[in-house]
Image 1 (cartoon, one colour):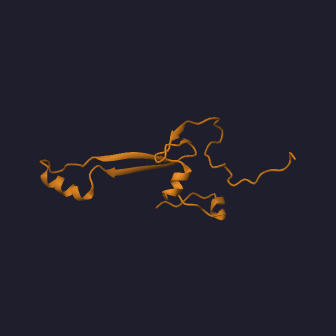
Image 2 (cartoon, rainbow, N blue to C red):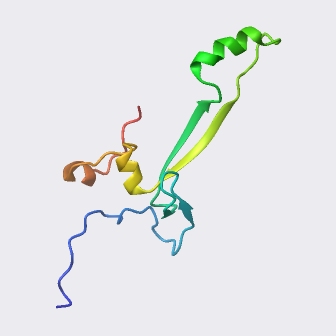
Image 3 (tube, rainbow, N blue to C red):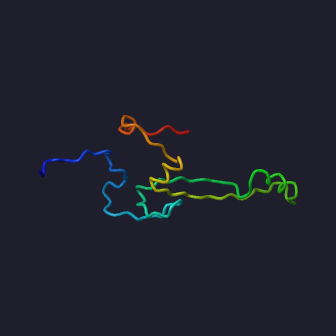
Length: 106
């Protein structure tokens, strides 16, 4: 019975931890689940603090000619379930999952 092995879906087991015994956990941005840092889906977003419709009004009423509207710099950390549900990442076929080449940049 000891020689039977379960099939392995991913070469890395879904994690980026090669020789680290333990990694720090983070809370998912969506559901607050604790996720290890190497397993979490991380996205860095830059958003305007003001919506697009208000930007022109602010520029017109501003006393300075070149006023930079401040931005939000947010690092979003998702668990796998929320990342798939909110379409941050997609489910890939077996052939594409086994591919070792880096993903294409947008």
